[in-house]
Image (cartoon, rainbow, N blue to C red):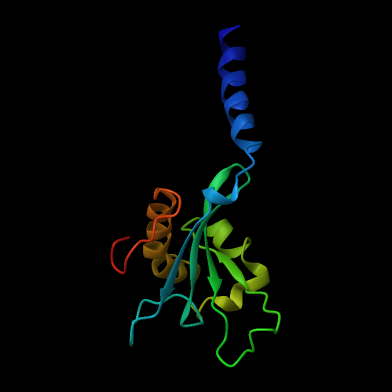
Length: 139
């Protein structure tokens, strides 16, 4: 009986999180850009938005590319996005559709090393109150 409760309890708690439907005020975003000749910038574009969003019942850090210069305001723009994580499976398989949004890396380990600081920044962004504007260097 105790074993059944031990198994049922995590499933119930996981089920509660899985069916959480976030509202728009739960999304956190922060514009970021490459600073000068920053060597550790993991993305193939120089600016974009770091975001904390809900997906699959958990907070996920993502990077959305910025609007390209020279694109008219009335032109439709669908930014590419990638999951920013140190989980090798999510980093590789979860980003297959937009992997060119990352700068080339010699290995998965190198890519993890490059994105790790941004994954940490994104998790800190997730902890910010709704509507907060975080200044440069405060994350």
